[in-house]
Length: 270
Image 1 (cartoon, rainbow, N blue to C red):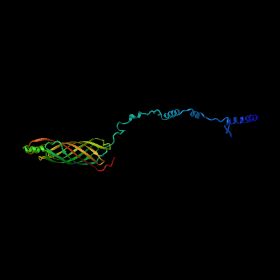
Image 2: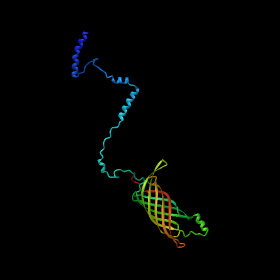
Image 3: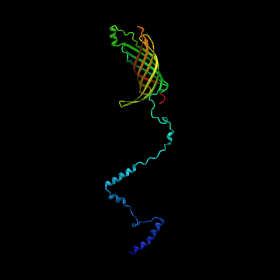
Image 4: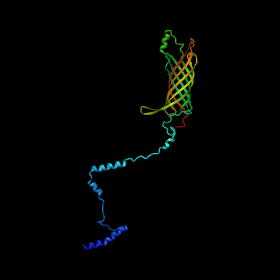
């Protein structure tokens, strides 16, 4: 017992000096060494439900968003309306400085006495995506309808009635509408709507060629940047004189045509 007491008295000054000078003690003192067992004790006293609840709270705390920072908005007043943000994509089929060749077939829809089939072609040049000029040439074949044949059998002639045989003219075109549409939920087809106004000469079965007014409209479905499918509705109005009895009258023809459009030269932009 005395030996232990004497040893303690000898080591006590050394331990105090080591703590003051912060030097490493070359041996361990079991009486000084301590261990933090609070976490182990917490796990020992916890249930699986309480552990899961603590983990859930920890995850919620980690993903909780921080408060948004304030953004300076004073400079927005200097932006130009509709110039700094583009919300409409360009036309799929380019037209500026390009030609369009459009062969087509169709028929006259409003002739009560004759069946008229239309075979024609159009050649357009576009100054921009919206405006262009178009040459029109059409040849029209004419046959009698059943009602005309029956009237002839009853000595009611229709020879004095004028019907168109051909047309040649020039139109101004305006293309203000374009967009895209879905096809059977499989593909997207770009399209353009156009309107036109112009004039030309209509050759009739009376041997006359009266000046004619032309109004038109149609739609074009682009397959790629040089080929499209196009349909047209055209209204022609003219005044002519009958070669049979000399009577004059005003005639209107409503044409529906369908064909392909080929654009050239190749598009070097977009």
